[in-house]
Image (cartoon, rainbow over all chains, first blue to last red; front, side, top):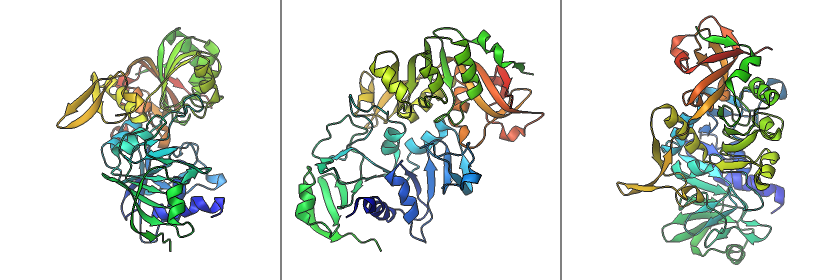
Length: 219
Length: 215
């Protein structure tokens, strides 16, 4: 699969996990693309942790309002029915279990559903922002990421980087497949037929439990 | 009636080594004119509490660039490379706090609470050095309340009493910070004769001074 196709492919598959009426928080980067691929009959409420529900598409350049941004600081719009709130309420919504699904990227995920995506000691220390609260509070945590980092596995037996949260991930969606995190480990539910099962296993450090996986379908 | 002060009078309310909460999320909802004045006054050794480090030339980032910040308490510093540089050189202490924990620490600080129990950060380095408490079989980290000497707030419409409303996503940390400091200065984008009492977001009792923004 071509590099530029991968992100859209992953986002498209994540979109199928969302149900009508869900309150969803999409992380910065790849997860933001998920909104472009929602099935026609699925209407979700997008939350942005800086203080809004009802996130709409990016505005035309002439319509940019510097007071309306998403959590990545980019200009956005508010859909009818949308509203604004402060940070304390925003994280009450997040921590309080009112967010149905959060989709975010990660540097590493492991067999226990722990993830690491906020710091590479000595190299990059951006901070956790709202990620720790989101993965702790959301009902379902989906990690949307490329399967490897230039061939180096990101799905590990145990994360080696400092954790964002312990045992919070429910699903991992990559260009190679769909993996569900269960108590007994990582189940490969679906695979992309552009790859063989052997290739997927080789690109994954963690043990995959493989029991008649389906082909990933996007249409 | 609330005292309306000129922006130059900000110097009467700041001192070296003080702690300041500054509203804003990536500088959206940061009272830039007050930050510019702080840079001019050049007050030093500040503890700044803000969602993030802003940008090099925007938001609280201007104070960091100008070397005025001794300690930064924030959830994210990734968009201001100067903050990472000063941190690694040991010239600025950075305390990274999960965003929801930061908001709740401030809320507690303003609400007379000593702290709160949160699952956020369990099993991570956020937990280090903190008490973990089990309640009904669930684990929580004990996080303490946060207060500061001064809050700088970005008000949208402010009436003469000091009642304040915010606009859109510029609200973020502003209303909660206005409750948690010894002194609160609101930068008013617009002074208005009256506000609908149903829609006031920061009651005037929290506000000490208003600075009218000159546009």
